[in-house]
Length: 265
Length: 188
Image (cartoon, rainbow over all chains, first blue to last red; front, side):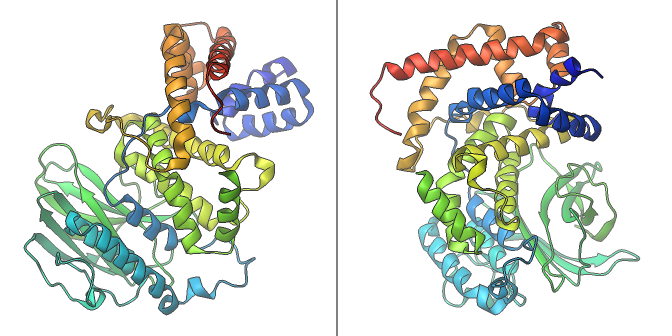
């Protein structure tokens, strides 16, 4: 490919549409092509304000809790920082998060169960001996150790997931119906550690065999992981099976990896 | 605004969870709205915002000042994550628009006043572009399509795509610059 054609890759490079070979080629080219450098800078300048054209949209209910809990459940990529024991010691970690959950509970008391579940899942993902917290009185008064006190909301289904052949692990799943919608909470333990970008994903499979994503999680050092997920798929579904798969990346829209845990619903 | 971002980012580097939470609160609505602008799907938008914050938390040193303003940088990361998701999920875009979500609400954080003011101007400027130029901006910037895909979608020769995109973007920038001149400069 001649010089002129390489310059033509600029826009596709900007949009990350190039394959690895072309991308490497273009990067090398960019380092020496003044024209492309200027053009790339100009492109960045011209598009800089475009995100602000987005109409403000209210974030999803409970999104902050879900996101922060899964962010804090992630391992840090390297160990340059020696002052990481806080992250590694669960007993230390649970303190700030406990207060965090309380304040969220106070703020959003009225929104009810889903928030409680999400708050609980924040703890589940960080704390080794937390249980589902299913009552609807706000996450106060020792809620963390409360075992399955059901409130007025209906637990539609609760199952134990068993490991498939060749894999280890156990999990419990509960589906809870609330006026505001259905939520699925899954807590797993004894899972194998992951490598690279692998992630565990939960799937709901309906009687017609269609598979729906129902959350993603990464296990902590003890092989425990948890996720809470709002069930708001379009249409009516008659659920047949719940499964956890090991996916190559956390973004699979349909299962690609092996089923690790499963149960009929 | 950006000094506060930098301070929070420094603290995040030291694994200060509270700092990440504060930064999250500052950007939640903007990043979510931008992701929604790109994907038109709430569930996906949440995943995108989550991925951006996971990167921020788990990759020390991912941002530094040589990468420009923190706010521009995090928006770029959000866009890249968003168009990447779009590409992966292209086959089953069953839910093209979530119309219920298109409620126009005001940003809650006062510092996002820039978003509110500029957003109006940019939307108005975009709507004044010729239809073809609007499509260019949409397909290139918000959908992240390759030049070939844009040519195929709009049935125009591949060789003209780059020129048309640049023309559309420049046109837009010029309109924005004159809009800016026309009002008080109330923010930085």
